[in-house]
Image (cartoon, rainbow over all chains, first blue to last red; front, side):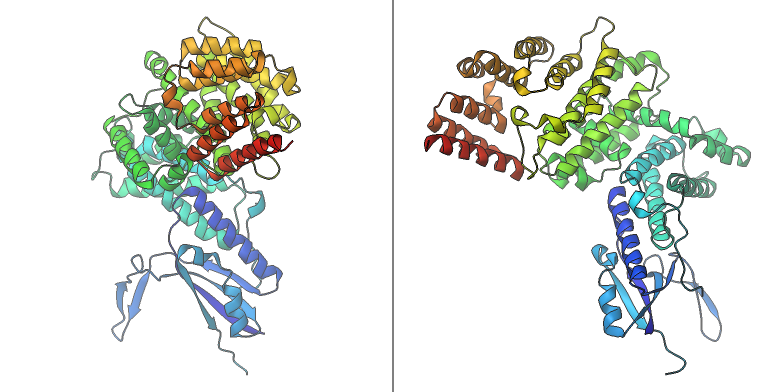
Length: 113
Length: 433
């Protein structure tokens, strides 16, 4: 089993409270399913849409273009899967696709191979 | 990093009230509008949307907290404090609260007060009355109530009323402008104003219920939702000392008695079933009892409203264990009364159907032919369906078929079309006998 991280990118705000509630319940059901199948290493966390970017030798601190960025990372989850193909397949059930978002699937680099 | 993290929430997604967000949206928006002032309704709506987005972000990872309403309210309160501190002088807020908001000493207690459960209950009534502004048309009032108090989006309202998104958008935008210009929310403590506007509020709730019960939307879920919202708001009105009038009780009674029949309106295969053929064992007995209780409570005073009459008609249907046991003569008499209070071609049509039940199809047809303003029924599918049924009973299958065809042409959704196709079938099967 290999570990992967799902980075949730973008996704539109729900148009109504009801749509929002349904969206959230779909996420919870999906997470639960991942857990029941034994793929959930850690639920992970949501991220604020704000933050700072510290960069360069001069350690310049800037306000990232966070709030405006369309493909902003909104959260992450750690999962385990046989290989990248399985990790990709599992990600396809993510409700983020219903609101025009994307999942970035990245293998976590292992120390010992 | 912690591994095998478990959601911390106590309420699972499955047991979450499906209307939670909808109802909390209404509660939060009225509290915030009270704080920010009616002219800042858009700001209140933004804060509510932010609170929901935060809830969704956090809950989908951590699970729903033990008290989701309190969580949402707390989030909205925090945002409100932020905004009021940051923009204390940049905007004007609710005129009656301005002094309390300006001082740091009173800001937070004022916000807590505004978000208090009892205050919110009153604020929902204030908003309900504000939405029924005399300058707004009835359809705009209903749309506004659904939008602000029930958290329906423009497209959800457009779906429920089978109108275009653009039309609903325009109606709501215009209605909000009228609302914003009213400067203050309606004062529910002021007795003469309250009583003067109460009939408009009752009417808006009645129309909301009717849209769910008889409306054009094909989706049963949407319809049930509209009926339920109308009943929730009526119950709220009944909790206010000035709102608790005989007519409001009657309105509540007719809603409960009609809603009791909702489970029987659509049969097992999802097809519309007429009152005459309904499986009465499916009617909700508890709602019938509730409706009859409300009808009793409405029987005071000397004002007989259209709601009293409609509730009385519904009560006769609910009391009849079988269709044959229905007291059609009493129903005809009640329709006669209704025609004197609120005459309309639809009421006249329903009366004619009752006449047909008690005096035979010939008499029913005569009554339909003599309806004043009958041309206004041309686009109403059940007008043609009624003619078809009566002709069918008289054995005139060809005429019946023509009427059902006309009904089919103006049917408003697939469910109605399927129902009418079944009726074509009834004409055929009699023919081949």
